[in-house]
Image 1 (cartoon, rainbow, N blue to C red):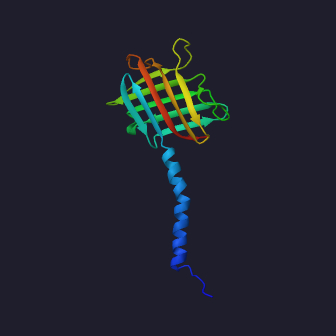
Image 2: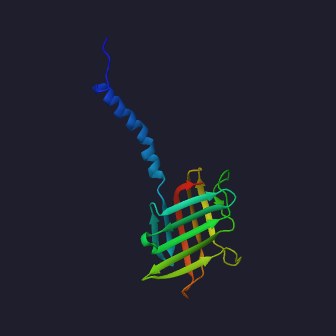
Image 3: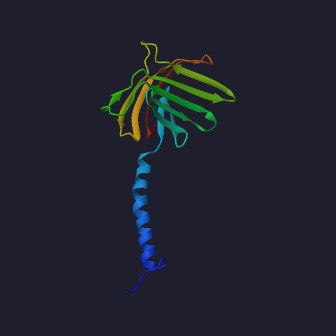
Length: 164
């Protein structure tokens, strides 16, 4: 009877095959967990993706999304007093607010919708969430908070991994 050592080709092939089988689902899962926020802001499309996009849900507080460009040239954030766990989808967010900031040549202009004005609500609709990935849309008008700029019309979508 022959024993197979660790340097045997059969053992090496088995280890490589096992590693591929384990990493295959992880690679597929990573593709479905891309972090993306895309918005039409006064008709101009702005996209955020990657590590500078965060979706977080805090127990007792709700959902928050923040997306920024490198060097914070464009940043968007929105949140709702809505917990996603155990909900049926699609789900309209409650008490949602949003902000948008643009930094040019060291000057930051900010727009803010606090969600407190009943005549100007900010809408977030959660299309789906399985506890690990969240997907949805948002829309509303953001009045200027600084810089004396005109209000912004914002419509967009988001998807990515949800942290708790």
